[in-house]
Amino acid sequence: MKFVIQRDDLVQSVQDVMKAVTSRTTIPILTGIKIVATEDGVTLTGSDSDISIESFIPAEEDGSEIVEIQETGGIVLQAKFFSEIVKKLPKDTVEIEVLNHFQTVIRSGKAEFNLNGLDPEEYPHLPQIEEGNGIKVSTDLLKTMIRQTVFAVSTSETRPILTGVNCQIENGELSCIATDSHRLAMRKAPIETNHDASYNIVIPGKSLNELNKILDDTDEPVEIVITENQVLFKAKHLLFFSRLLEGNYPDTSRLIPSDTKTELTLTTKEFLQAIDRASLLAREGRNNVVKLSTLDAGMIEISSNTPEIGKVIEQVQSQSVEGEELKISFSAKYMMDALKAIEGTEIYVNFTGAMRPFVLKPLHDDSILQLILPVRTY
Image: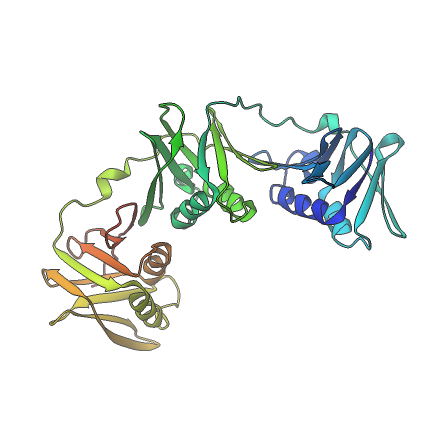
């Protein structure tokens, strides 16, 4: 194998596939990046067997040559060293040549590196996913939906299914739900499907976080292809595979209260900043709890009291308060996460009593919902 490539394109691809490479793996060859050169261009692959990322660098794009292929072939190089070398090469072009016994030479300008490579045939094959029954979602929308839900996945392995985001596709609508059993985040959006498929899958939160970092902010569509135990996200020159979590996701629709006892309408930013200030004295340890009480004339009071540090009280003017009086305590962190995920200058908070879960959503928008369980304080 021998080719000359533009360094910047190579660096970008290496950074993308590196997101799937981990040093802690039971399969030693997975600490490497697989590089394959064909007539069409160069493909880089990284994998930790949960996530696999494939990045393609075309030989030419928009009329300019990116890669000059002199000899096709493949190699697996140690990811850690290869990625560092590529970043620090002196010139704009890089020549990569594989000699006998997988010895690989990397040249740029007057610098020359020799790396020991591994046999590409021994690298695990990526899952073969049949094309054709995919659904398309614009990149911007997909990234937003991930950002608005993935923070609520569970970080504890006691219930592995809750470490993922439940994605359901039905009647041309995609809905994503995440919960760690103390809070829940949900986002829905209409999507284009060319068939009446319905899916119900759980994608690991970790995979979605990595996918979010790699996808560019564009409105170009990403194609999503789902199989029994894998999901593939297909963007321009990029394939992102993730395994799916096995098991049944709990039915979360029962958690969302249908009745209401107290309703508040608030300015999102003002409310968020007040919670942030109240949490300053409540950050110690696990109990970052703040209290919300309704007062007269549409005022609400936000307070926090940590005996060994001090206390804080702040009044916030709401646009409207309807229903019963209320005193409720909740995690400041959960509330701030939820408020940051909601897009909209005004929010609507719906309480069904001091010990029942409450719901936040933007005014006049039912596509996003955040639910938080209160904290018992005596």
